[in-house]
Length: 213
Ligand code: F6P
Image (tube, rainbow, N blue to C red; front, side):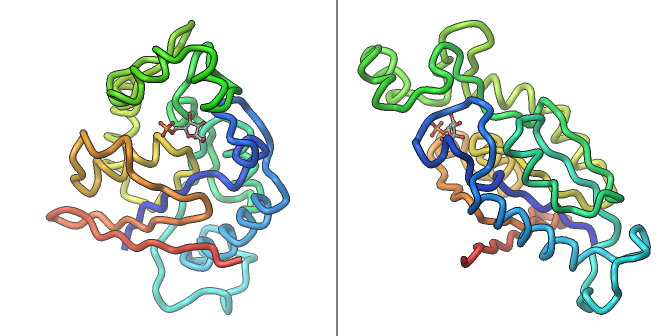
């Protein structure tokens, strides 16, 4: 049975100090999640593709070969590092976090102080608010850049693990489970939570796993 695993990257240095965007590395806690993630997800995929993984580690239920897609930001790539290198791991830009233009690397408090009007405009409508500055994005821009990736995800016949970011997770989960677009920007997607999505003829089944450490 095919499955789509979805997770945010492990805890990053910027998560700890509430800074948005940027390209910070994982914290020690984030690295521990990435190791637990690899052990857990690999246990569902048969060793045919990775013949020297020990069979005893695999449960009865198995979801076939696995591809791994990460964004090309450091925190997402580091989260996939503990995986057996024989899995096909690709890092792609369309899975990168929303780009916050001139506000990259800042905290929400700093943004509010620097520009209260911008801050209020975003609060009023997160979906259409586009961050100012070169390459700045809105949620709608992110949805647009994700479209081809979603089509590819739907067409694939093998299982995939997607290691990505808050806004991308919100978009993908809302798309696959039919959550309203207006609600999507406020979905709570915690760190260190793995979503297992199984596409069905009608809708999708979703199981959520929390890292309890
Ligand atoms: O704080 C982590 C983060 O992924 C930021 O990099 C990003 O700007 C933010 O979450 C997106 O969430 P929101 O749209 O709620 O600000």
